Length: 282
Figure 1 (tube, rainbow, N blue to C red):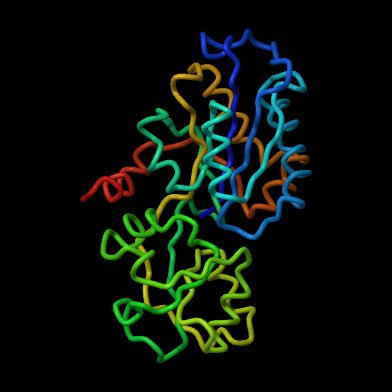
Figure 2 (cartoon, rainbow, N blue to C red):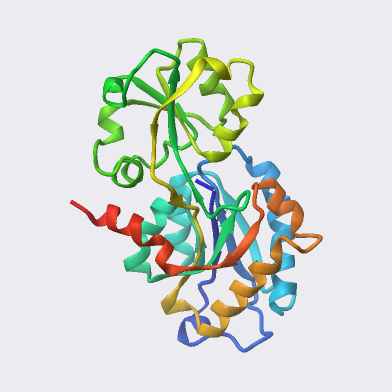
């Protein structure tokens, strides 16, 4: 998913050692979804998130009202919510995880799977025959829905080879189709796409006019992370187990379909080692 989920709470009692089982906070622990690289609108997402909260409570054995849902599709707002809400669990972008994992003590508890895969490849598309290499795109326009975090793209996707903010003229978009149409029409020089967007290309009449000029190494899809200092091992285990059953639940399925998820599975901390190494390389 360059796609993101945040399960949070700021209660003093929880910070001191956790609420008693079955004891919800008065206002509910916020569940904040930060989905900043896709085309799911807040209007469409919020009803699904409310359903998601209730399903998570049932599957985890919490009473209704233990959690409450929040959603943002804005990167800065996501950062603000994390800072103000004092999260317990986070499913942010991969860049957010890499940027905050040490300070916030982020521990993976579940990972999503899309079309049977827990990783994705990012690709730069150009008009067929227009540019022979990534280097040839210096100073050219790059569009797409995945441009909200140039630092992550530079360090991880492009492996430190270039700084997207200075190498390209970035043209971010909220929707995937518009920049692709502009690319085919010659109004854009290149577009960055993820796996889901790339797989959808054959359905476009102009797809034969486009080609890949750059392909990243596979990177893990953003996972669910616990903030170690604010969660107990039991809470982390219950949330992880509940998420593994989530997409198989009748009411959870609509949420997973909206965000294109097959489901969640147990997190493997080692799956993030390669991107952590790229992020920390200088």
